[in-house]
Image (cartoon, rainbow over all chains, first blue to last red; front, side, top):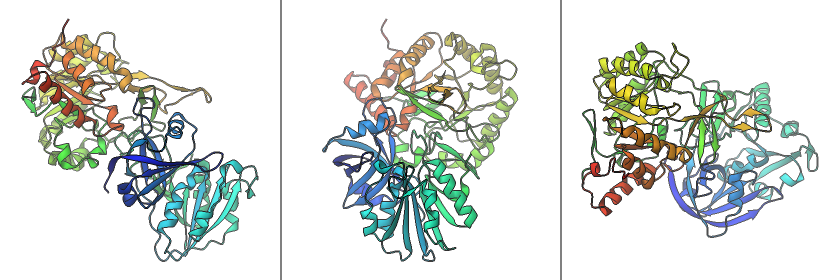
Length: 257
Length: 301
């Protein structure tokens, strides 16, 4: 897998809703190379504050542009929010193991996205445009402020269901409350990305129904290259790095406390 | 321009290497041609038997630095020699193999395995390991450091470099003990024991409770320790601690280090060691130096 370190120009920074932003980079080499589930490691500052790059799952890679989703909550993401069109960012990527493409025998693909974890599924649905399986997105947000129109998914032929913790949009409850909205079969394949409790619920659901699936995990990272072993998480095969062995793991490999 | 460095008879083509535990799989990022430019490669510390490492969180970012408590996750010396060493040898870059052990016997056993494996340039002793007899790290005791170095030197067919901990009152006392016990070189410095606390949870931000601080934040202390030590020992020093660019590395060389290692900053910019090397050459050229020895220890008082 070829890794690229490049400097890319910010071409747009779009407010998605009250919570999320979308950063668009002019990065043809990256756009060509990136696969769904992979991430880019962005230096948000050329000072030592913050010291490390920040990892972002790729939301879209089209026409030479690479887009990432982010929520400005920490020091790094707040600095990213301050970027202007024309600013140049140092980016490493694409990094990590992508989602496994579903085989032709998969008849139903269920994307489960929690909050910002929806990001990789846009690119994934772009890539799967020609796959004949039924495609469903279950999206869970904290409140109305965390949801946004899912038109782009609908355009890709993905049926969408929404839940919010407070019930302000869609079904009230966690995204797992949407499981009963869909008719699963043994040929269903689940792809999940979101906060750990959600991933635990998805893994438990998959185990109970004997479904196959993968999850993209998140952890604090330093290098993003599998060198520092700082982002290791427990799996059924011992500690594995989220950045290099993951971020995508088989649901059955994951260990939840 | 002569920039080759000799440590205990092993020759390194240039003075720039990487600190143990900071390069790992980054060789996958480098092309073969780029790896070959490094003066030496120092892979992550290996122990006698496999270690699974510490539970998360293993790292936390701090002002201009990081705290880590990885727990020396490694496959053990046998699997390292069979699985990883052959690939490292293929790079053709001199290899400095970092080892750590819980007893002098285990250190000696690992060195014998490396003697048999062959094809390396030096052995680096990571002495920031618990000393079972005394409740301090080996590197915190001149006596324990001396005992380990002496034991390893008695069996090693390769030069031995002792990596010292900065968590001591006087690092020069430990350095002199290592030199006197026969060490061929010193690596200065390992990380500073540190903590960061999540005030919401009132818990340590590191799974292991404490960890080691590294990065630009510690550089001035590392430079001071290298300078003090270089004034007292005759053996070469590999200087490290927060190096991010050639100017940082030059401080260490001027302070008396013969080689320099990029550590934490590899996690930010994997190309940093190559830029450090180019920058050192550029500085020598600008200052009309033809031999790196004109630079090493050239601090004016």
